[in-house]
Image (tube, rainbow, N blue to C red; front, side, top):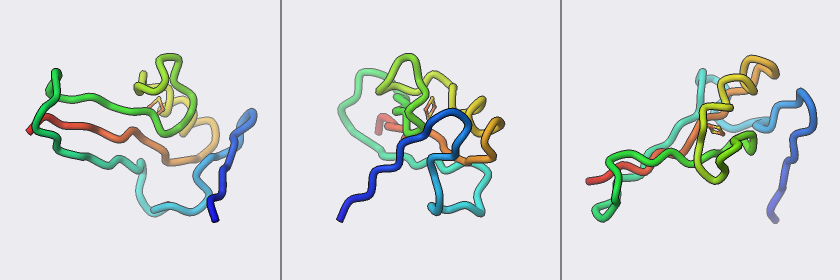
Length: 75
Ligand code: FES
């Protein structure tokens, strides 16, 4: 069963994942990427979705959340 959590206004979107961390960021190393680092948004706040534009910082401050991007790194 998949649970979809949608954030409205000042609600956190991460109710339970790794809440002991200041910001949840994961990395994947990929051999064939055009750029050395590509951040993908996981907070649903980015104006450049699906890419991260740093909007997670404002969201985290406003809600106490800890979401951060998925980083694709060139091998
Ligand atoms: Fe959404 Fe960075 S803007 S994770």
